[in-house]
Amino acid sequence: MKKNIKLLILILFLTMSSLLYSQQFPSGYEIFEKAKNAVAIVNVYDENRNLIRIGSGFTYTPDGQIVTTHSLVNGGTYVKIKVNDKEFAPVALYKIDRRRDIIVYKVDGSNLPFLSIGNSNDVKVGDRVFSIGNPRGYERSFTEGLVSGKRDFGAGKIFFQFTGPNEQGMVGSPLLNEKSEVIGIISSRSYMNEDINFAIQINSVKEILESTDVKNYSVPNFFVYEKPPTNFNIGLSYESMGDHATAIWYYLKSLKDEVKAETYRRLAYCHEQLGNFKFAEDYYRKARELDGK
Image 1 (cartoon, rainbow, N blue to C red):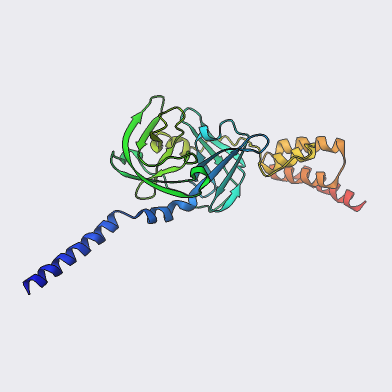
Image 2: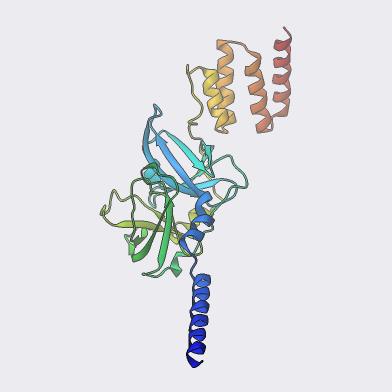
């Protein structure tokens, strides 16, 4: 009888311990499911739209601000981003700090899944860390490792050293804690030992990510093909990037090549976006007149 009671107590103890452990330490699957849809695939292309680099990034705001490393996209002409199974061309370059290897693109999205930014100061050597990226193009690959060191290389370059695979395609991936919060961004290893993994500590770049001072620089749109590169098509390209003022300039030039109703409609739309409603009204009227001829 006493043996049965002892066995029952042991079973209850093990059950309670298991429950407490599972509540305190989420499984890798739980972390992956919580974070996977906010991780982006970042493909970088040259001027001829040849793929030259594959990497990762992540959304950290629901309105489509996506962060990755500057070293990933540096030297490329076009960038194509896939997040939550939808492909985007960035509409603007919002924030950039080359020294700290950070770049933020804005895509035309709303209510996108996003990751919360954690506090990297709370991370200790030996803590479990996780990442989701695209090694060699294998999308949403999940890895687990440990923080093996904290490194300050000066000039604001503060990194975590961590264990775990870091194949080509993982650069720009979020380094996550057990709450699925971003505590680092996996960095390029080109200027470091290729056998050691490093991630930018998120606190060292948090001021950039949270800044409301955006650049709003135009970027070339991968999905717009200027064939042939007429003034009208160049105008379409700038319009697609949200640079309506430059688009207007090219549309006006295209009217010297050929007068078309569609050109006037595009001019009207661009002026409408800029708040120039009198110009928009005049151009819409000219488009209707041409359509009636």
